Image (cartoon, rainbow, N blue to C red):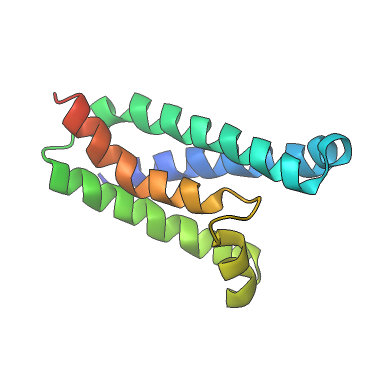
Length: 125
């Protein structure tokens, strides 16, 4: 199970890194930083939904509680990754995660935590 969790998180993280690179390289120039962050965040939310929705049968989770634990593990890995990307700067991480700003990272984290149990409740078995 641990191998599957880490593998899927790495797939989500790879999508996030590629998405961020595209945002910085092309979208920010054409749309401006705020709109580029919003569009990039929406794309990342869709990517994570595809990965989670497509992987739940492979994970074969036994309960909603187990699915919530999976989401919590992915949330913690994502927070550690984001903190590392911010070079340990908690203030920068707090600003990045603040709801209401152009960055949708707070929604990405909420999705990462809650989508596994919600998906399992909506599509059992």
